[in-house]
Structures are given as C-alpha cells and as structure tokens.
Length: 482
Image (cartoon, rainbow, N blue to C red; front, side):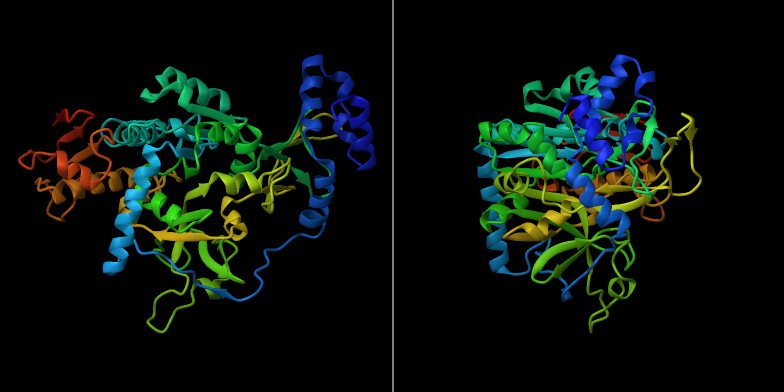
C-alpha cells in the first residue's frame, strides 16, 4: 500500500485522517517521506494494538504457577559437570572453527544519559586506552577469529536515529580491523506513538512520532534486513547476542555456545545472582513449564522478595541480556512480516504537532509507546538453558551518568578484572591500604580475552607500579605512564 489514495482510505476508515492534515503544505520530499512512513504501518495490527494495549490498558498478567528455573552454575559443582563443561568448550571451539557462529550487538541507543552526543557504542569506555565500546567488542571478535582461523561475521543493530553516524564511525575507524565484508549494520523497526485518545501523533507536519520497537525488535530486523539470509549463506547456525552498554561482556564464549549446542537449545541466556531483591534486572522464572523473564518493574514485590527456607531469594538470578539463539529458531519466529513476540505498553511524554501546526511539549505522559522484549522469545522455544556467570567477570553496564551502573563503576570493574587476571597469573599488582587496585590497568582482548589465556602468555616477573597507567596491547606491547 504505497499510493496516496489507498492510504487516505485506510486512514479515514480508522479515524486517522489528521495525519495528512498538512499534506498540501509539505514540499515533495517531505510528502514522499511521510508516505513511506504511513505505507509501512500494518493497519490491521495497529487496530488490534489500540484495542488491546490502549483502550484495554493491558496489564502484565502472570498466569499459572511461578517457580524458579534450573540454572547451570558458573563453575561445575562435580566431576560430571566438569566433564560436560570441558566437552562444551571443545564443541564451542569446533563451531567457531567451522564458521557456525555470528556475533550480534543491539546498539540502537544514544549516549545522551552519559553526557555523550552520539551513538552509545561510540562512547569511550576503557580505563587506559579510552576505547569506544564498539572497539572493545570488535577486538574480542577479532581475537576469537584469530584463534579459530575463521571469520566471525558481526551484525550491528542500529536505530533510525543513529544508523548514519554509526555507519560513519565504523568507516572512519576502518571497522576496527575487521573485514568490512564481515560487518553488517542495519536499523531496527519503529512503532508509532499512540495518543491516549487512540490517535497517532505527528512529531512535525510531515513526520509521524514513532520510536524503536525495543530490543525484541532486533529479531524481525534480522529477517527484514536480509541478515538471516546472509547468515544462512555463510553457514552460520548460532547467533551470539549482546547489548552495547556492557564493556565486560564476553561476546564470544565457547562454553556458552557449546552448552547451547550440546543440549539442543533454541535460545539460551546468561544470568547473574541479584545484588538484592529489587535490583533492576529481569527475573528468570518458569511459568506453566516455560522459562521466561519478568521485568523488575512487573514482578510483584512479594514474589521478588520471597525467600526459601535457607533465607535466600527464591528468584535469585537476573538477566544480563546475553543470549545464544539458533538461527533456525529466529527464522521460525520471524517468518512473514510479523514477529510472534508480544508488545509491551509504556506511557510516555511525546512532543506532537497540534491542529494549528504548533509543536506541543506536554508536561505529563500523553501517549503510549509499544516495544518488544527479546527475552519473551524464551517462552516460545522448545528447549532453552540458563547459564549463571560471575558478575565481576562479565557484567558492568554503562547506563547512568553517575552512581550505580555508570562509567565510573564500569571503569573500576574493568580494572578489578584485569588485576585479578594478572594476579592469577602470578603478577604482583599494587594495592592501596584498603586493598583496592592502585593502578589503572587495561588488557586488550587481542592479547588475552580470558584469565586462562593471559596466564599462558604473560611474564609473571612483569612489574606494575603504584599510580601507573598500564596497558597490555595486542602483541604484548606495554604502555605505561606515571
């Protein structure tokens, strides 16, 4: 549906004719842009969403019995587990050597909350070399590719707002040493903002007010962009999914990949023990026999705080938005134009153009935005698994300008992890009177992306002095300044 007459008819039938109110005032390029926006709307789906999520004020419904899930430990608890983990690491390595693995980062966010103008992935996030987040991930992918002798394609989900600057950033940085043919960038879809009266909003006379359709929108974007077809042509079977705001994330994890494959899972997840009952992490649960994640804001407080006989939280592990997905599962889920994931409602303050053509910036929420959550896909799988990991090894997100989950805490945690790896390898690390690391330390993934690999390469007689800025680079070159 791309011609104006057909769109006018569809809008009129749904009481949305106001979207063309300023049509005659628009220059042709803006008319064409608005027409493309309107043509992209699935009006039948929109009608259903307005009835379900707006008029009905859809609430989160947790039906059936809610029980804690089974979680694989970060470290095997017995000999049988150790044997399985060793086998899984070998299998993960085999998958990488066979070119069966792709990396996929969701990077549609802006760095505004961090005081950074531009895509969040461009934010400088490491303690010594000040590498942007994208480079942190690229170096991990390169390291895994170098070990396996096989290229690992990297798919980068952007948003309509940051796609162009993200693409320019990659080109300006020569794709961080990766082959440009192995890096594919594409934007996620959007969903129109719906006013409380059921009317779609205009953000300008020639543009709909819309927003990205959530991290769950990454799955239909894989299909619509042609990324899934590209994966199929390359022989990729497993997708290593992560989000852009976590500099400690392990982008390519042989153990995780191998466990997923050996257990015939379709979608797997990593988890960390929650710091406290109300931590802002999604809660892993089993509802009616299906593993799912319930957002911290949706989890009833009495359940979030419930404890077992031993005094520990019943729902004790939270999602860190790290997954392995089988390509075949994503293809099944996104077959056709629609995706089977549900849309979640959030009330937002959305600037809009009123009938007089003036921009209004409301002081209170005036519209509903709808988005998909990727973890909802877990309930649609035939088989899944959850692997617990150690927070100090793999999770320190950059979400807030200050306080918890801020650049400062992420820098601190990167230094702590690097120091722990060095000490495990026999290197003395300077510490202050309180036991805190007394140097800024950074290890490039191109030198070592795990404690085990570092131990194989490092000279234990290495000297690091208090107050030093210590960088261990790609070839073991050391950069240090007082």
